[in-house]
Image 1: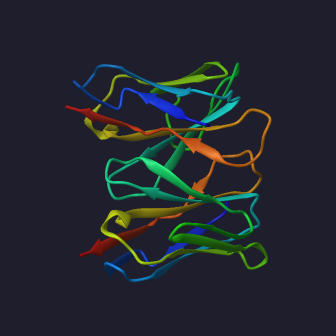
Image 2: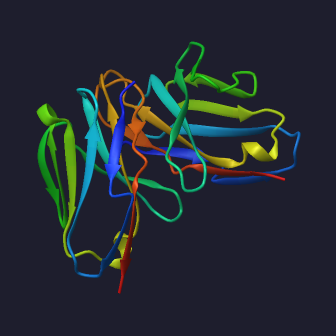
Image 3: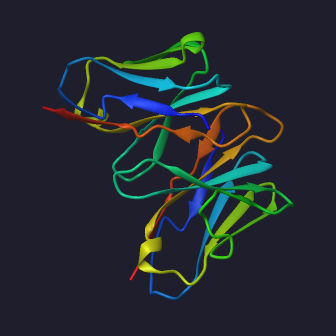
Length: 116
Length: 109
């Protein structure tokens, strides 16, 4: 149980376009999901906290108008990278916490974004 | 915020050898997890271990919460153990995980 999926697993786009990444909890409900970004050979850095039915909370230095997060249901959060540029190329990973529970966070397989 | 330090940063092992990876954290935690990130980037959850000792096959982990550290033991290492091992902590149990910088393990045949 406790599976988190991400779609797409990889995407290549042209500079200036927008890309949407989906994060789904497949067999549980998640009131809270987190979005992380990982550059090559570095650790995961939190971008934002996504709460179902409310606005996301962004970490310092993360542009909320560039990285749009929507958590429309208890099983789906989306991250849209708007007007992507080459420096946005990275590995984006989401995680989810089982609703009503404390403890283990479950991670998606990640989405590799390359902006040309 | 809470700080997480992992050591060593890099480790090269001969196949069959044992190793210990360490994670120090600067404040009390409600959640501590060890992950293995495979070459495709997937984070594999190894242990959820805010305290105590757990074992899973050739892997085991111990967290001494009062002294703010955790250890991951890998015994009889195999080439498939190669990758990056991350320790991550959450002070409250319902907030984002804070990751250490990881230990990059290479197991050679």
